Length: 176
Image (cartoon, rainbow, N blue to C red; front, side):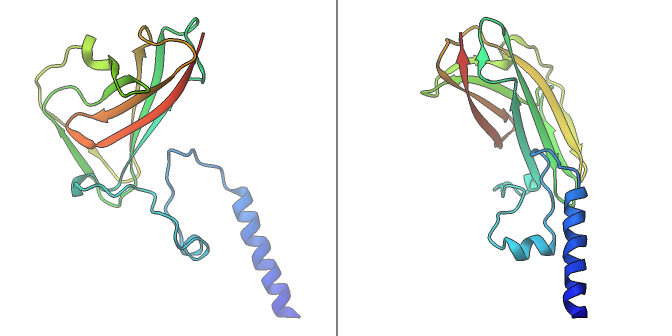
């Protein structure tokens, strides 16, 4: 009898703890505890496994403005890029110029319509970015929508020119 009461209290305590936790945004992967690994043993790790060992632990996230994109109201598409380090060690990224990211608007057949860097000037000044464990870098940018047509699907592709493995694509729909 006392064992079943103790078990019920333990389950209530765990359920109360789970209900009291704040829901974290999807862009922040959580480290899995032993209880989570027991319940979901085949779930993948939170960070992608890159071929370049220097990039391991980095998670790239992309968010676009409200969808569908109304071309009559919007001249610039808001693109929010987050690069998070979920590893237990710091990650250093080296860049030969001031340019860190590249954004491309593509049509459904992967033809490039607009490139974010085409109307920007970058100095040939080398730089380095150090991302400590648990930190993230946020790049809020906009890209022109002048090449888009209504009622079609387009693709936003974000990547780091110096690190081609750090690449993310997202489809979106346009409205008149």
